Image 1 (cartoon, rainbow, N blue to C red):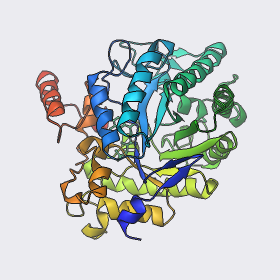
Image 2: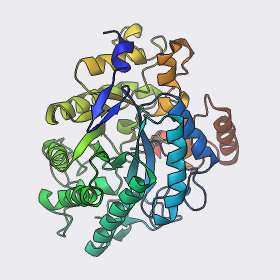
Image 3: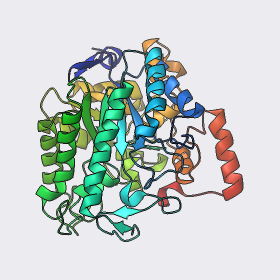
Image 4: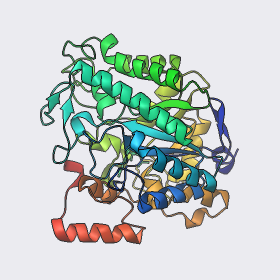
Amino acid sequence: MDYRGTLLSPVKIGPLTAANRFFAQPMECSDADAEGNPSDLTYHRYENLFKGGFSFIDLEAITITGESRSRLAQLEIMPKNAKAISTFVRRMKEIEPGAIFVFQLTHAGELSNPKFSRRVTVKNLPGYEGDLLREEEVDAMIDEFVLASKVAYDAGADGIDMKFCHGYLGNQILRPYNDRDWKYGGSWEKRSRFAYDLYERIRKAVPDPRFLIGSKVSLWEGFPGGFGSASPDSPVMDMTEPLDLIRGLEERGASYFVETIGNPTITISYVEADRDHTYMTFMHSYFASLLKKTCRPETVVVGSHFAPFRDGKSTNLGAMKPSDTALFPYAAKCIEDGVMDMVGLGRQSFADPLTPRKLMEHRESEVEYCTSCLNCLELMIRQEHIGCPTYNRHYTEVFTQMRKKLGKVDAMHT
Ligand SMILES: Cc1cc2nc3c(=O)[nH]c(=O)nc-3n(C[C@H](O)[C@H](O)[C@H](O)COP(=O)(O)O)c2cc1C
C-alpha cells in the first residue's frame, strides 16, 4: 500500500473506529478564561483540528483542580465547568461528528506553579519541594478524577486519557523515587495502586464501553529514580514496572496508549527535542514498538515525536536519505512495520492543523512543516497563550511582544 492508503485507513479503538491514522496530541495552550473554560482562542484551535481531518483528538491537559496547577490559564474540569464543556464538545462534533474526542485529565502535583497555586508532592524531589500529600488528599483526588470523567462523559466526550506522563502527578506516584512508606508509595504494588484504583473507579462510574479509557505514559523519565529506572536512586533503565503497568491498565479496560518518554522540566529533550537534537525521535520508535509487543493486538498504540519529519528536503536527520525523512512516508512505514497503529502530531498540529486534510486532498505540497524551533515551548514556560509563532500571525505577535518585554529564555534549559 502507498503511504496515503496506510495513513488514511481506518483503525478500531475499542468499540469505536478512527477514520484514519492521525492523532492530535494533547497540547496545552494556556488560553482558558478566568473560570477555566474554553475561550475564543481555545475554540479557534480545536475548530482547526476538527476541520483538519484528525480522526482522534486528545484535548490538552485539563486540570481536575484549580488549587494546584501548572498553567495560569489552564482548562479546568469540575462540575462548575460542565455547561461550558458540553457546549464546546457539541460545537466540535458539529464540525466533524466522526472524530473521536478524548480529554487528558491531569493534576500537576510537584509541577504546580507556586506563584499562583499550591505545589504538592508525593516525595520532595530536589528543586521541586512542596507540601507532602497526605493519604486522604490522594483519596480525595481520585474522587475528583472520577467526577471529572463523569463530567467528560456527560458533555459528550468519547473518553479520557488518564495522564501518566511528563512528570505530572500520575507519573510522580509511579516512580521508584516515591519510596516513602504510605498507602500510595514504597512497593510497586502500592505505587501502582493509584493508577489501578482510578481505572477501576472510572469504569464503574462510567460503565458505557463506548467511553474509551486510555493513557499517555512516560515509559522512561530518564533521571535517577524516575519512572522506568531500576530503583529510587538508580539512573539505569528498567522496563519491568512500566510494562507491568501497561498490562495492568489493559486488564482494567485501557483500549489505547500514547507513547512518550521524559519529563519536561528535567529531561526535556526526551519529550520534545529542539532542531539540534532531532535524532531523539528514534528513541520514541523503540518505546512505541515495546508497547506494541506488550499490548494485546487490539490495543491501539499511538507513536509520538514526529515534528522532526518534514517535507523530505529540509531535515537534519543524519544517516537517512532526505526522501526517507518526509513525514508521510516515514509515518506510514512505522505503521506498516508494526511499530505503532497511529501517528501522534504535536508541534506539527500547531504548525499546520490541516496536515491530514491536505494529505486527503492531495495538497501535500501545501503543508507547513514544524521547524522544531521550540518557540511554542518558550511561550508555555512564560505562561503566555501558546501556538505556532512561525506560521500563525497571532502567535508571532504574542511571541515578539513577549521577547521585547522579557528577553530570550533558553527553552531547553529552564
Ligand atoms: C507547547 C506544548 C504543550 C504540550 N502540552 C502537552 C499536554 O498537554 N499533554 C501532553 O501529554 N503532552 C504535551 N506536550 C507534549 C506533546 O504532546 C508531544 O508529546 C511532544 O511535543 C513530542 O511530539 P511532537 O514531536 O509531535 O511535538 C506539549 C508540548 C508542547 C511543545
